Length: 279
Image (tube, rainbow, N blue to C red; front, side):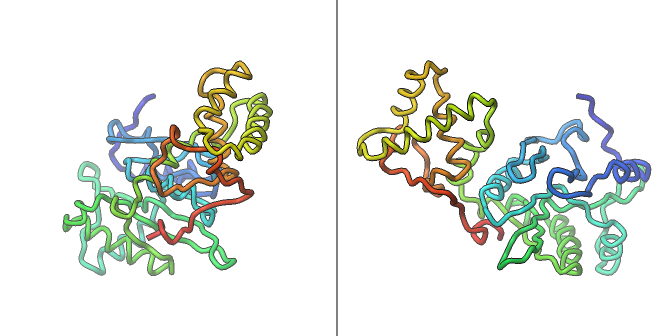
């Protein structure tokens, strides 16, 4: 895929606006920054979202890991990453505070600021917004980073939106890994998978009384009985867990070899509290 020049110009900003970047909600939202815009940007990731049904753009593993937690939290309604701030407002804030606003040294163009995540959540029956910036904790020792965060903090305060910084210290490693293990199995690949997975689920519920029956063994037997490729039944197990029809302890480290069918909890709804991950 061709990469675009990373220099900022007024023409580039106008083009982004005309493309609808930073606008829309859910599947219609277009991030201000995309992975394809940069020739090299480290650990970049694009993931299909559960809640938004669109591809999300991440420029670090830390952003991606936080996204996994947001996907799991029931209270999150919408996730908008790489959200642009009004540069006229950020420029004014920077001037008032005596903080240099970032500019492109090549073109002299003011560089639009972004917030890593703008979240829509449901709280006490009302829709509210949260702005969250993701940064490795070591970078909080950088004075220039703190200056730019002060502009961002003031920007969201003026809009009445809660803003906070999230570092790796706020992200529970086991839970992140567990959601990542499930994430790509949220949807079936075919109509045949839909039918077979329902058969799998019914048989799994009927087997729960067998105290020593391991889930791994059950999945292997289901693959064998139905002449399926090895791992197919496990993907069905991941699907129903991702859909929260099967409730597991997401805060503990998963070991599929040790899970027993009798330990499973079958439920119509599950989820974790947003308070533990929103900062």
